Length: 326
Image 1 (cartoon, rainbow, N blue to C red):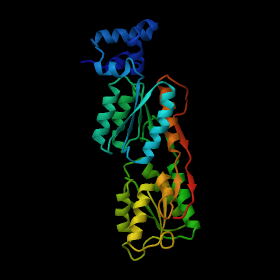
Image 2 (image 1 turned 45 degrees about the vertical axis):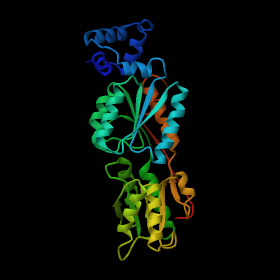
Image 3 (image 1 turned 60 degrees about the horizontal axis):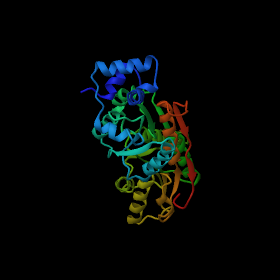
Image 4 (image 1 turned 90 degrees about the horizontal axis):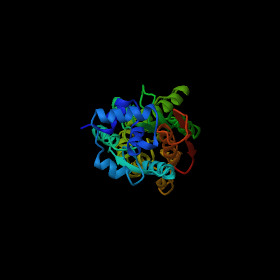
């Protein structure tokens, strides 16, 4: 059975264009309308009842596909995207993949088969690039927080390398010389870029870098601490993958009898609400998470012909927030 994506491919237009023309053919004229109607007839396309139910009488849906909606960072991203989408009469639908590549591809394909003008996506790994590029030929796709190498997809992100470099420099100015970095999974572009920023500063001052690959969870911080604090010369400062990882590091330091920041300083990333309420309060690099979501929604709507925007990659800046932990 032909799908709306098949019609879009045959007509050489976006799926959203096919949807609008098929919904109200009399409202359109010209070659594009003719190509779409001819392709639909040739493929014997029949609109999906599900797609009609979702998009016919209600506002169209905009999928937001993220690794983990339980991470407050992505909840803030969703809030920012929702604000912009609702202003355009659209609704955000969150798809949380658990960082599972197969689930990511399933969601992306399922969402592209529905009548949606665009997809917002944070990839957990680079391996989905080919599938995303295939979908992006017919549905506007904008990446959030993480890029996909060798693609020209629109992307809204912070300068992860610059932010990590600023955090590392802050720790060095506090007198630390054994500064370690707990990264997120290196399959994520954001983690690789942060490690690169950290290493660049350590190399510049001639100090050895120590990187432990972890993840963006509290448990990941605890697990990384088991490696970091076990040696004869443990680090006196740690740049964490994010605030959740930093909370795990704080807990592990406390369990090991280490005082923060006297024995070991901890610096997070994101500035989640929890950063202000742990003891000691967390020094961190604030990401403009809601703005990331909002700007991504703007670019996606522009790409779908529903708004204005010209940036291919929009890079925002993180801000160092100094509290008690570092």
